[in-house]
Amino acid sequence: MAGGHPLDAMIINLDRALRAVGGAARGTGRGYPAGGSVEADLDDTSRRHAAGLMRVNHAGEVAAQALYHGQSLTARSPRVRRDLERAAAEEEDHLLWCRRRLEELGSGPSLLDPLWYAGSFALGAVAGLAGDRVNLGFLAETERQVEAHLEGHLDRLPADDARSRAVVAQMQRDEAEHARMAERGGAAALPRPLKRLMGLASKVMTGTAYVI
Picture 1 (cartoon, rainbow, N blue to C red):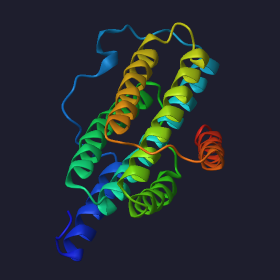
Picture 2 (cartoon, rainbow, N blue to C red; picture 1 turned 90 degrees about the horizontal axis):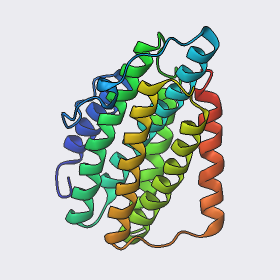
Picture 3 (cartoon, one colour; picture 1 turned 135 degrees about the vertical axis):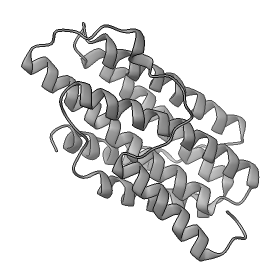
């Protein structure tokens, strides 16, 4: 996107935002991880709990889309930009999978998805402006925290909800690979206070998205 007309960049990013928030993600065409799992006979409480966790995961993927889009917009290296855009495409798979699972559970995404997108896009753009190594460091730390967060969801999901578990497990594997990609690209280590701040912001989003 570097070197293009600013209006082109604005249109592209508006389209990306609308697709991420509006449920029109394209993805890479990978199959649905839960496709081979049988739907469990969950009681109402377990179903609502599983839906709340999957809503949190969907909101996290909306935020991830925005973060990658903001980071790629301000990335300096074409290689870093390509890596970010490839990871963003895989995260679109996660959006599709989470939304499908929410529909299977009779629920829907967070009403605050536009807010998660806007805030994360701004953070991503700032990270990109700080330089490619910081940009990749921000990506690596985000993915490490998301990987840990998904591990927690695997512990908290109903034991017999194999379909939600299959989706979360594949997402976790993808996030780990994205972190490794950033590290291979030369990610800088972020200061501990910034890591803590990122964790606190994540807790606010996840706590809110579970119910709204």
